[in-house]
Image 1: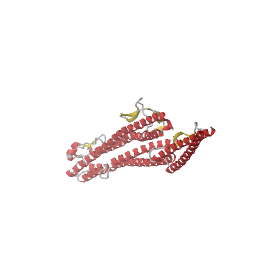
Image 2: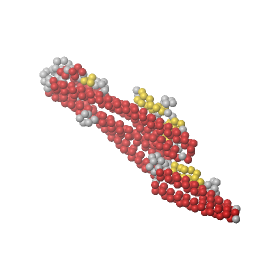
Image 3: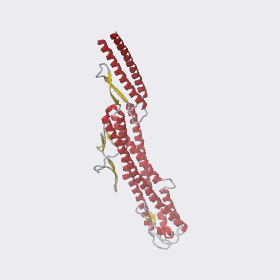
Image 4: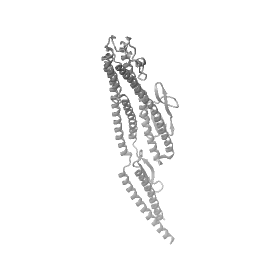
Length: 436
């Protein structure tokens, strides 16, 4: 009887080992299959002595290998990279708009206007030169109008971009909440749910700059939870004269400390673009006022005092005086009214340095911001790459390691199969002996 018990115990031990090694082989195979799957964390089978089969073995868990410390740093790096990329791309667009190509830039158009006035100062009665001044003045106004329109359209596009980012963030938040709810029911038996949740949390961090809890069950922004287990706090955009703002839909309160791509998009839309539009408005108004002040001191070909050459309150509405545009002889470019006197035209032309310097100063500041945003994006990219490599060394799949494990589990499986075979043969022998 004792022999029979020992024989069947050996059989049960062998079977428990077969099942456990088979599970380990399946998990290892899954690791190999997902070696290139984004967001995949390698799994490990946790074995322990079987509580039901003395001397046997049982699989007690399948764990995901993850470093919470590295994951938290990667979340922050993802948010910074997303924000830096948005900043770099938009600032380059602003630079292109204001700088344009050399022959079509505001600077070159202003130069043509002032050069036309300089030529007119030498021949103030020449009607063709007067027409050129009017035409180049109209070009200056059109250039200011176009630049203002382009910057305003870019600002408007950032609003649409913010809407898309909010939808993207809500989708990631919902995915996180759903994965949390399913994981709570399934436990650690389905680590793919945790992978899906972590991927959604990283995407959420990219857009909002959220920080997740170590177990991934919650995500916070400005100290307030966006996701908590299977629950989601809804958010959306609100629009006012002060700009576009992210709010909690339940309370209507502003979401604090928004970072990531959405935070940077809102900063660019609410602060950066309006600042450049204002600089352009100031330049247009300064130009118009300076020209008008001198032009009103002049005398036209009819002997009348000059009037405003440009009407302007912003770069969007600056235009040449239509009365002068239709009658170039009303250009008041003479100081005394005497024939050949183009003193006012010359003095207006001398404004080129002042206006040009103001424009160059604006472009200089812009260039510095563009360089800073580009360097920020490059640094953020490098930082994220470094952290990703570190994370992969911990959580990623190493084919060499997995193949080594596979061989180990395969040999253990073969040994267990041999135990089962021998135990089975012994059991049959004992049964035959008992029957005889």
